[in-house]
Length: 363
Image 1 (cartoon, rainbow, N blue to C red):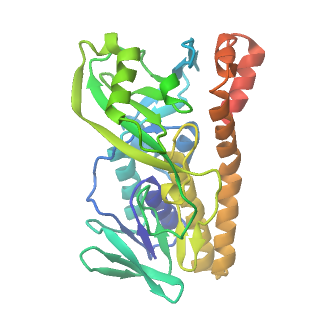
Image 2 (cartoon, rainbow, N blue to C red; image 1 turned 90 degrees about the vertical axis):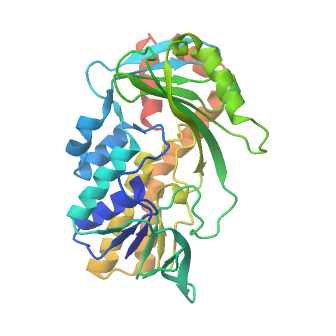
């Protein structure tokens, strides 16, 4: 078995396969590890749960920044602070640390890692995928090939035109912020998406924006500069920028389908399993990787019919993510109305807090 891509989806699939006793797998990636990856690095409560299931939480926790609350700014400029008390609600963990920790767990479970392998195309026998070929000509043949190559991966079954979220972000030292709190700012210029400040440590933050630009008409740096001037000018006045601004696209879909074909199973962002409102992909990548591993366990160890096992994988992905994605669509629509501002305004009322909690739990 070959797994193409060692991000959260690919490493989670590899680690879970190892835990399930399927060790005849090779994990391929174009980079040696540890490696940096442009990402806001936020891990949701669902993502934290998956890290525990993958048995890597104890390795990651000492290197993660715990989040216990959030600052919310509405499109109308209303502000609210939401605090859970001392209980950790989320973490910020650099992908350099996160992905490497899961990779180490996969290797300890018997999965073989091959770096510097840039998959260029798939191998076919008839309509069945039987492996992949690297840019340098190396071939890896496999009974099943798991595709976990991220947004730009073109080793996937043909699907309708994808939807894209654009993101640009930077890092600063010395920015004042409330410790253990993230900030989410729903600036009108970014709707139905948002900007953020995520603390990575006691001294460093990443600040970024996510937005849509289907016609390619927006200047990312200008949009980001206007956002920083509007929301962070005072706090950045004496801060020190770290490195360069980085941009990256995020692909998503409300429809969960087209994730398999004979000999091929697609996971994570390659399968457009990214949240349409928050742009979160780490949890969805890891969870889909685990679901794929369980389908492959059924095929390799229990003799299950591949087509049936793959169909079950798609059904389980829909059951896991569809409600959340559809709620994300509702949130995107509500952000263009006064509803969100009214909810924040009335956030001190218990009934509003409960309604908000129910909505957020569905995301």
